[in-house]
Image (cartoon, rainbow, N blue to C red; front, side, top):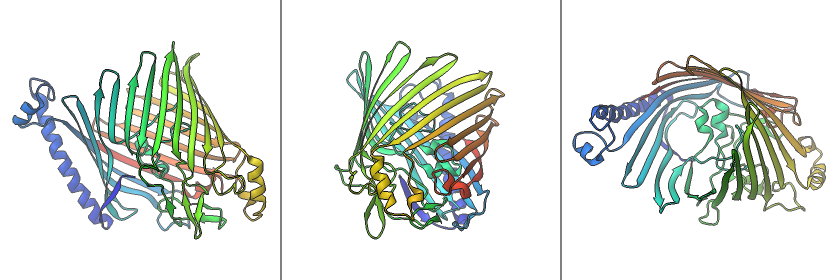
Length: 451
């Protein structure tokens, strides 16, 4: 997922190395700030003339962040009480030349959990128009669409759930893709098409920072199961499309996707155990409009599991229908409230029941035909949004498990900010989606300085 190990080292040496990286990043930033006093406003006018004057023909910015996360419960499956201990530096470059717009975002991370220093390329893309109605964007980029708030149906672009569940900034939930994107603007509709030449999977807990429930062993584990990601070009690429438009104030969109299930799940490719990603075709639609004091939305999707075989229903995911309803409004001044109701409906469930019945020791882990989730977001801000309190909760009536994300963010200045929060899990059973992470509940803190 864009992660390249630069050097494997201990935490102390790693932090020193990243401090050097941050110093290097600050140098160009100071040079960039020095150009803002020019008569043309810093970055306007002829960029090459500005370079001759000692400035840069592009904007440079970034941040340095120290983050730590600690398990609140004893987890015997993991060796470390910390699931987050890192110093991160970000360098962002953006500019344009002629009709070409370019952006680069690169992170350097000294990771005390994995005892390494690594580089992560978040973005490296160029954008340019083709004619009057078509815009193209190519390279490494973060992609997203749909109406959900931390729930996704037609947004099948890669997610980094491990970052999300351990306390990194919510930006890191969306993992980058190496893709080509075209956006065609018509008089009434917009067509958005994304081609990813090689499939980009989700990043799920794999035992490094978070444990998970192993249905084969019937216990919590941190063992890493090999996963075979489809990587043949061009056969294992992804193609996604969205057609959107407005009727009055109503936003409408239709979606289509051809690729693979983002999560390997129970798709067993061979013995010894090795997981892979089943092929997926998905179709959906969404609508959003003002209703009463707030905004209402609805999204539906149908997942066509291409590799599903009714004679072996546990070897690949069943077809699945999904529904998401949402409503968000400002209850009182500075207090926003949001609710969502989400349902997954497994198709051909009778075949799945019969297959699970042949394994009595595992039948207790059989998924429900209908799995629903209720979410609630509360956001309260004061001091001109300098202090923001937030609580996001998931609760599944079908699985009887929950996940709560409390946080408080304080912006001291435009440069300096603090964040404290937690990821709290629980449930009636140890094998359900949120219940399996109960021992991984954690609290975290982050200090960020922007330049």
